Length: 373
Image (cartoon, rainbow, N blue to C red; front, side, top):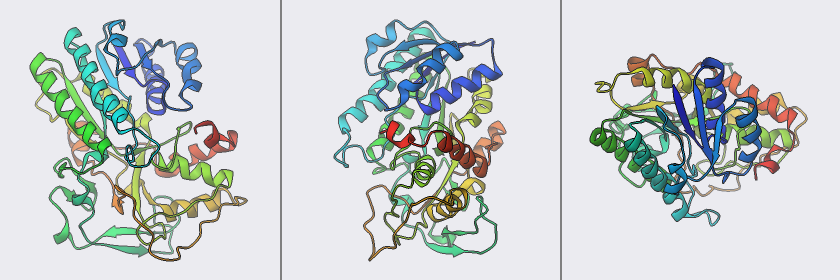
């Protein structure tokens, strides 16, 4: 088996490469990365020397950079510009995001068409419609017991009144039936367009295509920032004593997201690679931590205060209703029912384990946020 991983020096790509090498030492690994993500160049030694990957420095936006790659049996596309704020925060380019997330996908699909290579797209939970995710009833739930996934007690938004839920939303989160009608963010729309193109290319040219819609992923060594990788960013910021704020909604950090470790992708990918061409299983699968691996920012802060008792981080109380940024959500997680029924998949690393892994890495790398920009 020969696998090409795009974005291999990024957090998800490098984590998958390590997991594959440990579980399948006989598989050949090929990787490509353009090092556009600050910090990703630090993984090149790991990729080339420790993991023995056949590495190419290149950009999937350039079709000619893919022409020199050897034929592989499967592509795992882990390359993306992952920010929902692209084009509206004054720091990122909307055109660059479209060229990377959509144009790059087209180039990879042409590679798959040429070589008869299977394609696994690591897509995103952010393909789902903002309107569908902001128009149902929620309320704050608090408890003093250690009944939250982080063991801190509950202090979070929770959905109530199922009659207000949009089609495709359950108490466990978003199913694959939830609307993808834009706006969903330019990031989300480029990814759902890439999903459709991938399925069309696979049907047209006869190669297998699998679309894995991933919720927040986190773990040690992630290049996190406020718009992406919130578990990693929050824990590192607490460890470094940086100032933090709860942005939007009631200003008390009740917004909730779920998360999982990218290492947990491998058991699913192994089964998708082994699935015969022409499988009747849906190519679209939601992957996330679900309710058992979810936390609000308030709960995450409580965990951080216990884990880093000497932290100088102070989160001020709001002086009034704070503005809500475009594309922010008060409560969102992924319903993994299809993943479990079709593939027997569920996250293996608990949220406490994921956060502790990040915290230990933060202890060992006390200036990590400066390294990752």
